[in-house]
Image (cartoon, rainbow, N blue to C red; front, side):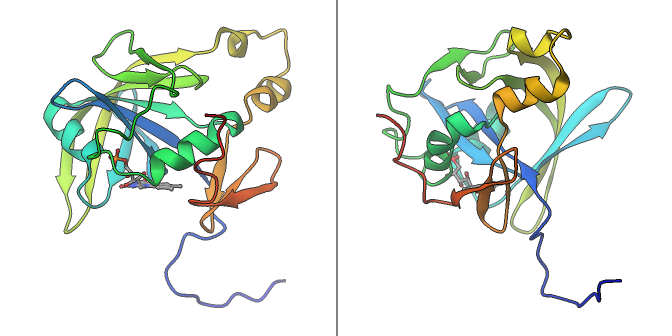
Length: 192
Ligand SMILES: Cc1cc2nc3c(=O)[nH]c(=O)nc-3n(C[C@H](O)[C@H](O)[C@H](O)COP(=O)(O)O)c2cc1C
Protein backbone atom coordinates (compact mmCIF):
# COMPACT_ATOMS: atom_id res chain seq x y z
CA UNK A 1 0.00 0.00 0.00
CA UNK A 2 1.19 3.54 -0.77
CA UNK A 3 2.01 5.66 2.25
CA UNK A 4 -0.13 8.84 2.51
CA UNK A 5 1.33 12.14 3.69
CA UNK A 6 -0.49 15.40 4.54
CA UNK A 7 0.27 18.28 2.15
CA UNK A 8 -0.75 21.97 2.11
CA UNK A 9 -4.36 22.46 0.88
CA UNK A 10 -4.49 21.87 -2.86
CA UNK A 11 -6.53 20.18 -5.58
CA UNK A 12 -3.42 19.00 -7.42
CA UNK A 13 -3.90 15.62 -9.16
CA UNK A 14 -7.68 16.14 -9.23
CA UNK A 15 -8.35 16.98 -12.90
CA UNK A 16 -11.10 19.45 -13.79
CA UNK A 17 -12.96 20.09 -17.01
CA UNK A 18 -12.61 23.55 -18.54
CA UNK A 19 -15.33 25.87 -19.83
CA UNK A 20 -15.34 29.35 -21.34
CA UNK A 21 -18.21 31.40 -19.92
CA UNK A 22 -19.80 33.82 -22.38
CA UNK A 23 -21.68 36.93 -21.25
CA UNK A 24 -22.80 40.25 -22.67
CA UNK A 25 -21.50 43.51 -21.20
CA UNK A 26 -23.67 46.62 -20.65
CA UNK A 27 -22.55 48.10 -23.96
CA UNK A 28 -23.62 44.93 -25.82
CA UNK A 29 -20.13 43.56 -26.45
CA UNK A 30 -19.56 39.86 -25.77
CA UNK A 31 -17.02 38.76 -23.17
CA UNK A 32 -15.53 35.31 -22.53
CA UNK A 33 -13.33 34.04 -19.67
CA UNK A 34 -11.91 30.62 -18.82
CA UNK A 35 -13.24 28.67 -15.81
CA UNK A 36 -12.80 25.33 -14.03
CA UNK A 37 -14.70 25.64 -10.73
CA UNK A 38 -17.79 24.17 -12.37
CA UNK A 39 -19.85 21.15 -11.41
CA UNK A 40 -23.34 19.69 -11.47
CA UNK A 41 -26.20 19.63 -8.96
CA UNK A 42 -29.56 17.92 -8.77
CA UNK A 43 -32.75 19.84 -7.93
CA UNK A 44 -35.48 17.80 -9.59
CA UNK A 45 -33.48 18.29 -12.79
CA UNK A 46 -29.81 18.56 -13.68
CA UNK A 47 -28.32 21.94 -12.78
CA UNK A 48 -24.93 23.61 -12.55
CA UNK A 49 -23.00 25.21 -9.71
CA UNK A 50 -19.91 27.29 -10.16
CA UNK A 51 -17.68 29.64 -8.24
CA UNK A 52 -16.22 32.90 -9.44
CA UNK A 53 -13.32 34.33 -7.44
CA UNK A 54 -12.33 38.00 -7.36
CA UNK A 55 -14.27 40.73 -9.12
CA UNK A 56 -14.18 40.46 -12.91
CA UNK A 57 -16.22 41.34 -15.97
CA UNK A 58 -17.82 37.87 -16.20
CA UNK A 59 -19.03 38.13 -12.60
CA UNK A 60 -20.47 41.63 -13.11
CA UNK A 61 -22.30 40.44 -16.23
CA UNK A 62 -23.73 37.30 -14.62
CA UNK A 63 -24.88 39.25 -11.55
CA UNK A 64 -26.66 41.78 -13.78
CA UNK A 65 -28.06 39.66 -16.61
CA UNK A 66 -28.26 36.18 -15.01
CA UNK A 67 -27.78 34.57 -18.44
CA UNK A 68 -24.48 33.12 -19.64
CA UNK A 69 -23.09 30.24 -21.66
CA UNK A 70 -20.57 27.57 -20.59
CA UNK A 71 -18.60 26.35 -23.61
CA UNK A 72 -16.64 23.10 -23.25
CA UNK A 73 -12.94 23.65 -24.03
CA UNK A 74 -11.25 21.26 -26.48
CA UNK A 75 -7.63 20.87 -27.54
CA UNK A 76 -8.31 22.80 -30.73
CA UNK A 77 -9.64 25.73 -28.70
CA UNK A 78 -6.93 25.68 -26.03
CA UNK A 79 -4.68 28.57 -27.13
CA UNK A 80 -7.76 30.81 -27.41
CA UNK A 81 -9.14 29.53 -24.07
CA UNK A 82 -5.79 30.16 -22.35
CA UNK A 83 -5.84 33.70 -23.74
CA UNK A 84 -9.41 34.20 -22.44
CA UNK A 85 -8.29 33.05 -18.99
CA UNK A 86 -5.31 35.37 -18.89
CA UNK A 87 -6.74 38.63 -20.20
CA UNK A 88 -9.04 41.11 -18.48
CA UNK A 89 -12.57 41.41 -19.84
CA UNK A 90 -12.78 44.99 -18.59
CA UNK A 91 -10.55 45.84 -21.57
CA UNK A 92 -13.00 46.25 -24.47
CA UNK A 93 -10.25 45.06 -26.84
CA UNK A 94 -10.09 41.60 -25.19
CA UNK A 95 -12.48 39.92 -27.63
CA UNK A 96 -11.01 40.23 -31.12
CA UNK A 97 -12.64 39.49 -34.48
CA UNK A 98 -10.68 36.22 -34.69
CA UNK A 99 -12.90 34.60 -32.08
CA UNK A 100 -15.92 33.04 -33.78
CA UNK A 101 -19.02 33.94 -31.79
CA UNK A 102 -22.69 33.10 -32.25
CA UNK A 103 -25.83 33.98 -30.34
CA UNK A 104 -27.31 31.53 -27.86
CA UNK A 105 -30.42 29.80 -29.17
CA UNK A 106 -32.61 30.20 -26.06
CA UNK A 107 -30.93 32.86 -23.91
CA UNK A 108 -29.28 36.24 -24.45
CA UNK A 109 -25.72 34.92 -24.11
CA UNK A 110 -22.92 34.66 -26.66
CA UNK A 111 -21.50 31.22 -27.48
CA UNK A 112 -18.23 30.04 -29.06
CA UNK A 113 -18.71 28.47 -32.51
CA UNK A 114 -15.73 26.14 -31.95
CA UNK A 115 -17.08 24.51 -28.79
CA UNK A 116 -18.83 21.15 -29.39
CA UNK A 117 -20.93 21.26 -26.18
CA UNK A 118 -22.50 24.46 -24.87
CA UNK A 119 -24.77 24.99 -21.86
CA UNK A 120 -27.09 27.98 -21.90
CA UNK A 121 -27.42 28.84 -18.21
CA UNK A 122 -29.48 31.08 -15.97
CA UNK A 123 -28.00 31.92 -12.56
CA UNK A 124 -31.00 31.63 -10.25
CA UNK A 125 -29.33 31.91 -6.82
CA UNK A 126 -25.96 32.94 -5.49
CA UNK A 127 -24.07 32.93 -2.22
CA UNK A 128 -21.43 35.59 -1.72
CA UNK A 129 -18.43 34.26 0.22
CA UNK A 130 -15.64 36.40 1.69
CA UNK A 131 -13.93 36.77 -1.66
CA UNK A 132 -15.66 34.46 -4.14
CA UNK A 133 -19.30 33.88 -5.01
CA UNK A 134 -21.06 30.57 -5.67
CA UNK A 135 -23.81 30.55 -8.28
CA UNK A 136 -26.54 27.94 -8.75
CA UNK A 137 -27.78 27.75 -12.31
CA UNK A 138 -30.64 26.23 -14.30
CA UNK A 139 -29.69 24.62 -17.58
CA UNK A 140 -32.05 26.26 -20.07
CA UNK A 141 -30.57 24.59 -23.17
CA UNK A 142 -27.75 22.26 -24.22
CA UNK A 143 -26.24 22.65 -27.68
CA UNK A 144 -24.17 19.78 -29.03
CA UNK A 145 -22.37 19.13 -32.32
CA UNK A 146 -24.72 16.84 -34.23
CA UNK A 147 -22.07 14.14 -34.77
CA UNK A 148 -21.80 13.67 -30.98
CA UNK A 149 -25.36 12.31 -31.04
CA UNK A 150 -24.55 9.64 -33.66
CA UNK A 151 -24.85 6.43 -31.66
CA UNK A 152 -23.58 4.33 -34.57
CA UNK A 153 -20.11 5.71 -33.70
CA UNK A 154 -18.56 4.39 -30.46
CA UNK A 155 -18.56 6.69 -27.44
CA UNK A 156 -14.78 6.37 -27.23
CA UNK A 157 -14.39 7.60 -30.80
CA UNK A 158 -16.86 10.47 -30.37
CA UNK A 159 -15.17 11.85 -27.24
CA UNK A 160 -11.69 11.34 -28.71
CA UNK A 161 -12.91 13.31 -31.73
CA UNK A 162 -13.64 16.41 -29.65
CA UNK A 163 -10.71 15.93 -27.22
CA UNK A 164 -11.88 17.88 -24.15
CA UNK A 165 -9.04 19.45 -22.14
CA UNK A 166 -8.68 18.92 -18.42
CA UNK A 167 -6.45 20.71 -15.98
CA UNK A 168 -4.63 20.16 -12.71
CA UNK A 169 -1.35 21.40 -11.17
CA UNK A 170 -1.76 24.63 -13.26
CA UNK A 171 -1.17 22.52 -16.37
CA UNK A 172 -3.46 21.59 -19.26
CA UNK A 173 -3.82 17.90 -20.21
CA UNK A 174 -5.12 16.21 -23.35
CA UNK A 175 -7.95 13.66 -23.22
CA UNK A 176 -5.24 11.01 -23.46
CA UNK A 177 -3.27 12.45 -20.52
CA UNK A 178 -0.49 14.31 -22.35
CA UNK A 179 0.69 17.61 -20.78
CA UNK A 180 -0.15 20.43 -23.20
CA UNK A 181 1.42 23.38 -21.37
CA UNK A 182 1.12 25.48 -18.26
CA UNK A 183 -1.58 28.09 -17.56
CA UNK A 184 -0.73 31.25 -19.48
CA UNK A 185 1.82 29.53 -21.71
CA UNK A 186 -0.44 28.87 -24.68
CA UNK A 187 -2.16 32.24 -25.05
CA UNK A 188 -1.13 33.82 -28.31
CA UNK A 189 -0.19 30.54 -29.94
CA UNK A 190 -3.50 30.44 -31.82
CA UNK A 191 -3.46 31.12 -35.52
CA UNK A 192 -4.41 34.76 -35.58
C1 LIG B 1 -7.15 27.38 -16.34
C2 LIG B 1 -7.89 28.52 -15.73
C3 LIG B 1 -9.05 28.27 -14.99
C4 LIG B 1 -9.73 29.34 -14.37
N1 LIG B 1 -10.84 29.06 -13.61
C5 LIG B 1 -11.47 30.06 -12.94
C6 LIG B 1 -12.61 29.79 -12.11
O1 LIG B 1 -13.12 28.67 -12.04
N2 LIG B 1 -13.16 30.84 -11.43
C7 LIG B 1 -12.67 32.12 -11.52
O2 LIG B 1 -13.18 33.03 -10.87
N3 LIG B 1 -11.63 32.42 -12.37
C8 LIG B 1 -11.02 31.42 -13.07
N4 LIG B 1 -9.97 31.70 -13.91
C9 LIG B 1 -9.57 33.12 -14.12
C10 LIG B 1 -10.44 33.82 -15.19
O3 LIG B 1 -10.44 33.13 -16.43
C11 LIG B 1 -9.89 35.24 -15.41
O4 LIG B 1 -10.17 36.00 -14.24
C12 LIG B 1 -10.44 35.95 -16.63
O5 LIG B 1 -9.87 37.25 -16.70
C13 LIG B 1 -11.96 36.06 -16.60
O6 LIG B 1 -12.40 36.68 -17.77
P1 LIG B 1 -13.04 38.18 -17.70
O7 LIG B 1 -11.94 39.08 -17.16
O8 LIG B 1 -13.36 38.45 -19.16
O9 LIG B 1 -14.23 38.12 -16.81
C14 LIG B 1 -9.27 30.66 -14.54
C15 LIG B 1 -8.13 30.90 -15.32
C16 LIG B 1 -7.45 29.85 -15.90
C17 LIG B 1 -6.21 30.14 -16.73
